[in-house]
Length: 249
Image 1 (spheres, one colour):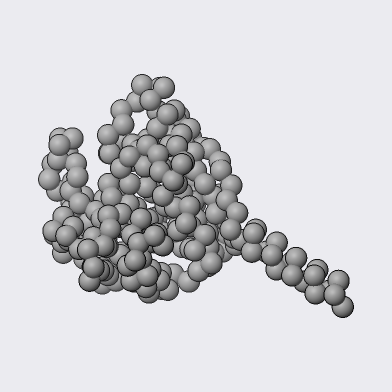
Image 2 (tube, helix red, strand yellow; image 1 turned 60 degrees about the vertical axis):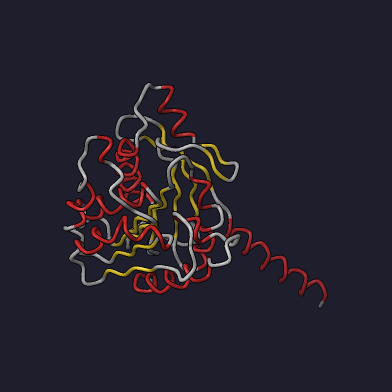
């Protein structure tokens, strides 16, 4: 009897460990630069899939804590390194290193080919179902742009602290808003409380009948890190995110 119980506990433990495992892979961006990514796969290709993109100066390490929780909610995930980034949670952005070595430009909008390549790679290899794009800070703005530009490919968007961050790059003050006007799929936007001014006009321009937003009663945090457990108000963000994601399960 004792052996049966121990075997049962081992199976449960092994299942939990497998559920939380990640696998690091590489694939090519549009211009041949290798993109490094962490796969968090817990289900077959019929499960909804979330592509996770990091904020400025960071890496796929932004999602070390977040992705396993999304797995438990029923989603497969992949967190990528974009070429515009750096390091976070002791995870170094390998895509940036590769792009630097190749002499590529590393401004925010130069990450668009990486995000496009990741979308195509996921849809080809890891999902036959719903595809959701999730961005943080500058990549959340680009997620809204891609959501509008490819509303027949992307089934939903989550944007953590977006804004018109691209005017200094010569792309105009409505680079994101122009595309956001074509978002017809479900979209969710959130940020720190004092960042609402950066995305309220973008949100207003989105015609989707399934758009949702969240601002915390607290000061909140910038980007997807708002969901990290180290912050006292992370549960409020998670509650809003969970409610939005329910429609895709």
